[in-house]
Length: 445
Image 1: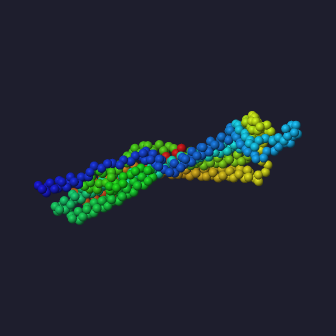
Image 2: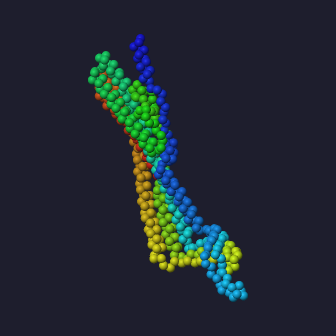
Image 3: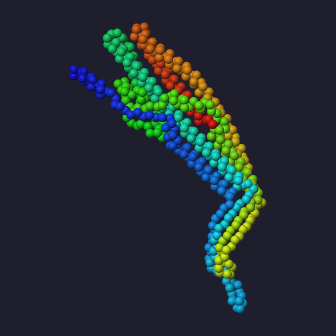
């Protein structure tokens, strides 16, 4: 009785404690990746800065109003000599003089200011497109990391399930060997299979831990640390065969596939942010070139001012002074600066256009590569599903034949290995399909 009690107590103590699951969701990972991406935040700030610069450039087109004032002290005041009958010498002013009042200025030119504003606006739009490209790249990296974790989890699950089956068969063969119904060699080989399974599971869980760390680094999601190697949550409660550890669960493959599938209908074209940014940069250079060309034309400056001035010449009192004026400036010789700057910006626009065309062609090529790869993987997955079904049937039949004495354990091992390989291949293809869809989604309009 005491022996039976000890066995029951050991079995109870061996049960794993209920562990909290760490659930990872793709949308949450994407949001966290955008919030923690330094590159994306930097691109957004650069876009906001460029928008502010465009607003400042546009302000030069409108009249400027301000309050102007001056205060001056002169130690020596000139005098005018007058006859004694007229009061003698008289100073022409005062040591102190001041002027204060509102003023307005408005500049009209041949289009230079408008071109500067257009260039700044194009540059701001280009920075916004670059920010969108940075956002897409951050999402793509987060998705790739997520799919890596998802595949690692699936491998842990498949190896864990295979290990449980191997242990169950080993125990059955071990009992048969002790009873003389099975050979000792088969029992040893079955034990070797379980040891190999435990080793592969350990490696798979270690790889899962590495994928989780990369996932946390790229997305900013806090992943579980400590407590042993992580384990797929579907294997929870099987501690007799599989050591316990932090439980991790990802979204089902089918849910993510349904979300990303519309990406196959998109097309990159010139709508890709990276291509659009280069196109806008070319436009900004052209606008700047037009501005330098317009700088050779006359410029008019209109001004108006109303002020209180002191003194009024030799009369020591303040007076109201209203004034208006217009000035004309026309560059006659500036060493070819404007012409060279115009040429510089036109050549820069041509260079940006060449980069744009190359980027558009590369995007079309990459998009078609991803699309062809996706379609090929779909066809391959049909074969993988059939291969998994055949491998599972072959493994069951091989073991059934072995139990009935019509097969060898080596045949069972080979069939089990092929079944696991077929399942792992199908899981890897699922991850590749999702990755192709993520690439297509990052390149769509």
